[in-house]
Length: 104
Image 1 (cartoon, one colour):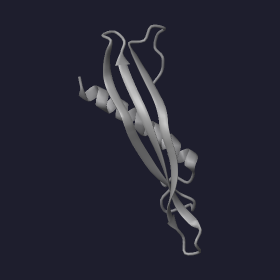
Image 2 (tube, rainbow, N blue to C red):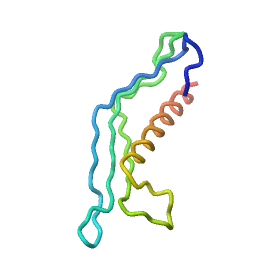
Image 3 (cartoon, rainbow, N blue to C red):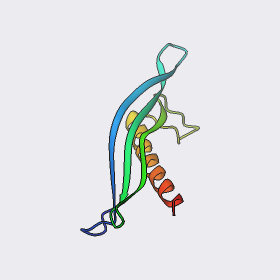
């Protein structure tokens, strides 16, 4: 998304309520091989023209796993917490847009 004018038609507000990084699995040597990043958001999208809430979720939880080992057979596997966070932010945006458009 980008700002189109100085007087927008909508506003998205959000807060990170919780952040977790949990261990999902270990390799044969006992080393951590997979984690899951989970972020809990509170999100509101407001229509500023009609002063109405278009989308609101005070407990939007999105998680993504990532592996500490690189799998050349599957390059789509996330390999860092940063990549998992970026994917989560993409999913937050998709969730807001999907739920907002469904109401139209």
